[in-house]
Length: 474
Image 1 (cartoon, helix red, strand yellow):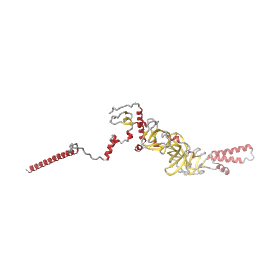
Image 2 (cartoon, helix red, strand yellow; image 1 turned 90 degrees about the vertical axis):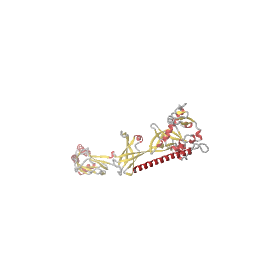
Image 3 (cartoon, helix red, strand yellow; image 1 turned 90 degrees about the horizontal axis):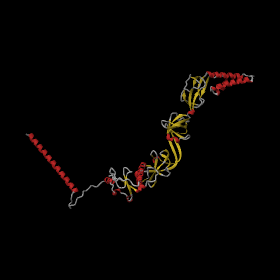
Image 4 (cartoon, rainbow, N blue to C red; image 1 turned 30 degrees about the horizontal axis):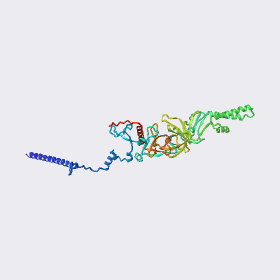
């Protein structure tokens, strides 16, 4: 019984809440329609239609409407522009399509009017497919066009590359012997040792050299005892003595060795080889007790007081390299090091893999700062003479030709085809097409290029006797 009473109370409460919700919803809708009627009302107290009030617009909304509003009042054109003569209308997507009357393209875009002064402004450039571009000062500033003057000055082209230090091959000496025998003593027994000219290098015991000394001393003794011998015998003994002396010389023994032998009449068992030049021992192929033969390479001495530096240059730089040009060398291991040398040889062929040309330079190296195998930075400053020079950014490279835009007068940018020479440090040498004093565009060139080509297309349409209309396109 108690449960039934509770259930009835709950059902009664639910129906009450539902009724209140429906009443509130009806009142809300009624208030909404009453408010809307007051704002847009059909009539006021006098029976005239009431105007709908609007909230004031923000500055952003007004600027947006002005930007997209294409009515003459919003365009704010000057009186002089409204008097300009329209000669035809062009398709906004394809300038080659034109119409004598206003029209729309397939996408519903309005054709753009072409004025007579615009079409006449792009004639007589001499550059096929391009026309001058006329801009006022405001247009130049908004598009970001910047110009720079062409100047006539001495043009120095700087070439930078990396070179490798090599030994001067003309200063590499190979120590050999002309006698056979055995190395008795080796005075220079490791690579890298510095020796001066005349320093003893090694001594060799040679039986054949000992035999030659004996023959020389025998001939010398016989020549001294000839006494009252006849002229024929004296001549014969003198011939034997000279032959023995010559044989010693053929063994490449020093002249001092022969004179000492002649003075002391004592056979020297060993012959000592002396350093022919000052330098570093860069090669050693012998050891004590080793047998040597004539022509065998014993030691290599390298004079590093002057070294070679070989560097590779790009193919387009080959024509500017000449022997005798000054070269400067910098080393990463010693930032303060600066050496000056000269180009001594240019190889007559290119590397087929890297397509580079190798050149050789010579540098003084008395302090031995440069070691063979070291990589260094090389710079060549080439004097190209007096030239017309402009910033490299002014030149537009199209593949077949090079174009610059010259500001001739009052914002008239004329495209010109130029012939350029060397480039260096952000500048380029102009051989023809631009004169000293001309102002060339160095920024926003691509905007000028596209507008120039567009103007050329418009000129082509103007020159047609009867433009082909397509005003039927809606």
